[in-house]
Amino acid sequence: MTAVAVTYQRTGDTYSYHLAYMLEDVLVERRGEGKPFSSVILALSDALKLVPDGAVVLRRTDRPGLDEIKLDSQMRDLIRQDPDKYLAIVTEPDRVVVVGDRKAKRSAELYRSPHVRSGYDTLAESFGDHVYVRLRDDGKVECPCCGRWSATIEDIPVPYTRPDGSPLKIMVCACLAKLSVKSVSGSWVEIITMLLLTNAVYGRYYLPRSWNPAGWISRDELSRMYESYLKETEHV
View (tube, rainbow, N blue to C red):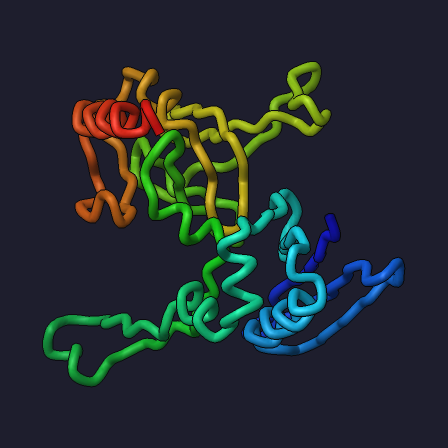
């Protein structure tokens, strides 16, 4: 199967990218500098019209340690058939952030630039075998145990490695929390739900996702949700 590889990085509000794939034994490449994210997706859409069954691999290189993302066939087909709809799904609109007291609300507004959500940004809002915590550009992680931006990701030294030889990772926080990390992708750190629940030291967790809009969730409630999830997927 032909693979369509897209390597890209963000600089300010624009992106540079390199797209490559094989077409009839010929290597086809496209590059762009200082482009909006939509240009990356439109270039990918054009490529998929030529290799519709190509396996899409996205590699973001803004900082070291980011995992590549392999798009499923549904998202790949959506990009090929309707890139505008895909962009509408994965791109958040500008948000208004109010600062100051109530009297200042009418006049003081800060606008955040549009944020492009990768496949992991969408996946992070789901609940299941894994939960996701946020990662900032400075490497700080929003700790699920204390709720503060005081955690970091560290490599576990050899001989403990993954089957492919890459180092295992652990999230370490100033609150003394230590959690095994399954992966680091985009702006998210993926943690196995069962491992989080087996850490009985903490009675609640800070996981502000779509499935938990309150932010904090008790260990008991998280355990009940996970048990319900396992029952629902047992025969799937």
